[in-house]
Length: 437
Ligand code: HAX
Image (cartoon, rainbow, N blue to C red; front, side, top):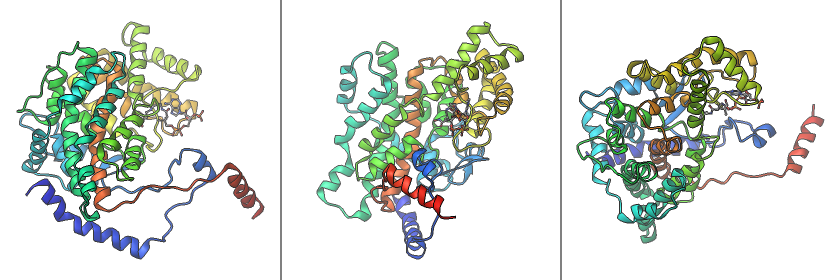
């Protein structure tokens, strides 16, 4: 059975479930919103739905109900590999079940068949100025593929709403198939004098990305798969997922929508934290000419805080424990690069910084997040161009947001349109609330 046939098979039950929920309980109240939340970035307002992932504050992300260790243990792996096929994760996202090896390969094969990139995308990237940021290049390449959108064509030809998900799935497979090669081409253009390694048709999607970056060390293919799996999805409220969803909710195709998501990932408060965390660790290394003592490390952390800066890679808006995405990468590093001095510093930071943040008493979560270590691992394998890390994050994030976009079409999610109020209205609401005991 093809991926599309499998999706079509499970869809009626989901449609029935959502229709029943809306019909029987559409007016049930889920949440209340405070003025603090309205002015505070809508933090923790429960107003989105996704079945693909859920972030539990104490446990971290679950993909379709499975924790990160479960996903890594249960998804099928290439022969001799430690980390599963990324195609298996995409199957899990779309279908909601752990795939067999044949089902994971179904996605991998779809990707291989759709991976060719039109020449004009390479020409466009060549035409951009040498100082163009790789994220701008990535976003431009994605949106430039819009003319290939099957959804846009079928929409203009006229199609039933119940069919919207089919071309959205086509587009999503086409886009995700091409992203590793687009990202690798940008890497070669920006940092390797345009020396580009073409994809190897015998490799899986994640390993091919490692191959196209030109990193030959054993271990990097596994790291590439791990990185993509860990960065794929984190519920729908994070900025890149939400921007993609918002743009797609207008029935924009996935090229327009994901380009919007990439643009929001490019901001320093979202996708850039991994660079800052690595830069901080490299600062420590330079300052102490190697791995510092525990006391030196503690003092360095306090100096950062006293300078009014945050400790990058620590804290989280939702999580209240160490991020399992940090733990998975930490365990990988323990196994593959225990002697790397930057990793040793990252390890020391993990032992020292939580206590420092607790003593400071501000951060609600003193534990490491995914960004505390991801740059360290890339750095170890020679991928040292900081600006590129966010592009890699974007390749991974495409998996979650495109799977969500297919489901949003399948379940007929409407255009997003929250209501705005003026500050004067909020002041009136506040005054009324104070006057009413
Ligand atoms: N170092 C120092 N202070 C910190 C801190 C850290 N790592 N984490 C939080 N705090 C401070 C906040 O700055 C805030 O101080 P003010 O009251 O003076 O503004 C206070 O503790 C309360 O913050 P919070 O409620 O615990 O955290 P927020 O939800 O406001 O912010 C952040 C979450 C991730 C942005 C925050 O913890 C932070 O800045 N961490 C460092 C940067 C970082 O690692 N970012 C990547 C996050 C992972 C991610 O989503 N990547 O895409």
